[in-house]
Amino acid sequence: QVQLVESGGGLVQTGDSLTLSCEASGRTFYMYHAGWFRQTPGKEREFVAAISFSGKPTYYADFLEGRFTISRDNAKNMVWLQMNNLKPEDTAVYYCAAHYGTHSNPRTQDNAYEYWGQGIQVTVSS
Image (cartoon, rainbow, N blue to C red; front, side, top):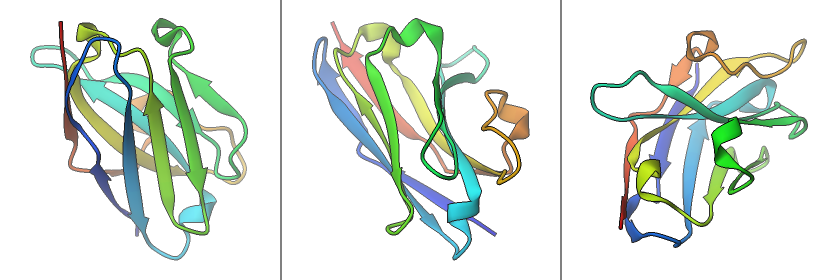
């Protein structure tokens, strides 16, 4: 069982940076891939980034154009999403998620993820 809690969201301006944190509970979190997804009203949840249980490899959505970085520290049961050069279209509720996978690569489809955080709002003003 893994529980995930996001923090670090808020209101920022275009071009600003923001780091989202995801704190995981459970002694076996190091065996889980982690991912970040986001959703805006009326749209489906979309993949943002994923990281292997070991920290490598990492995967990113094409639309990010290198602006975001996902990282983790298994000793601290933490996953982060560093977001740079934020744009108004990055406004969304961001979710941290995890799926078991020591014998596979992290997935980009949300239905592959077993555990989800409650979500946190990120708003980028123009």
